[in-house]
Image (cartoon, rainbow, N blue to C red):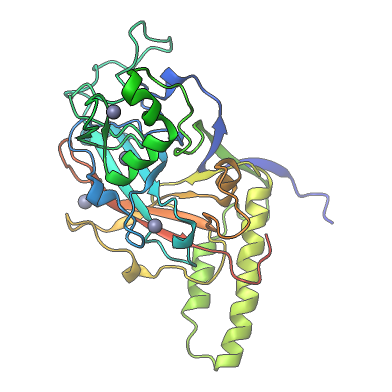
Length: 354
Ligand SMILES: [Zn+2]
Ligand SMILES: [Zn+2]
Ligand SMILES: [Zn+2]
Ligand SMILES: [Zn+2]
C-alpha cells in the first residue's frame, strides 16, 4: 500500500536447527555434536542416567534417544561444554494428548579443563584412532548394545555384549545377536531400534520485516491472555478460545513458513512458539530445579522432525505438536552428573488439521 515501507531481514534471536547427513566420527562425543537419532553421544562419560531414570512413566519400558543439543553457556566456566539430551518412548499408545510422561530430558556439562576431553577444541579432520568401542566408553562404563545407554547386564552365553534391560536384550537377540552369539561373529545388520541418525546444524532465524511491524510479537503473551480469561461466561470463553487458538496456530504457521524444514528452535530465556492456545503452561506448571533456581525456556522440538523419524503407522503413532524444554536458569553445577530437566508436550487442537 505505502511505497515508503522498506523490507529488511532481521535476526530474531532464535537459532533454528536443521537435519544434515554427517560422517559417523563427526557425531562422536569428542566432536561435541548436536544430533538426532542413533545412540547418544555422551558428554560426561561417568554417571550416565540409569535405566530406572530413563523408563517411560506410562508403559515402564526404556525410552530411546531422540536428540541432543550442544549448548554451552558463554562466560560460565562450569558450562564450557554443555549438552541437553531428549529421550522418548517407542510405544505409540503412550502418546496421548498433551502428556509428557513418555519423555525424559537430561543435562550434562563440563568445565573446559575436565577428565574426558582435551583442553583445545577438536580438529576438523577425522581422527586417526577409531572412535570408542560401541559397547564401552573410555571411562570403562558399559553401554547397552541396542540403545547406547548405560547397560551392565552381559549376555550370559558369550559375555561379549551388554544390555540395559531384559527388553533390550530380547529385542537385540531377535534382530542380531542370536546369530552372533554362537558363531562369535559380529552382525552388520542395521540396528532397527534406533531412530535414523542425522547431524543437527544450526542457523540464526531471519525474518523479512517491514519497518512498521515489530519483528517478534510475543505469542506466549497472547496465549496467556487466552488461557487466563476465566471471567467470561462459558460460551463467550469458548468462542474466545477458538479464535485465539486459530490465531496462535496461524501465527505458528506463518512464523515457520520462511524456513519450513526447521526441526528445532533454540532461544535460551526466550519464548517458545506455541501451536495452540490450549495447554500452555503457567508459571506454576514448570517445576523449579532441585537447586532452587527457576527453569527457563531453552529450546523446542518441532513437529517437522516426525517426518524424518520413520514412525508413521496407520493406527497409533509417535506424535507431538511441539516439545518444549525448560532448563535450570543457573545451569547449576553437578560435577560429571546428568541432571533431569523438564519437558512440556503440546499437541495440536483437534480442529487443527495439519
Ligand atoms: Zn511408554
Ligand atoms: Zn538398552
Ligand atoms: Zn551372546
Ligand atoms: Zn539447578
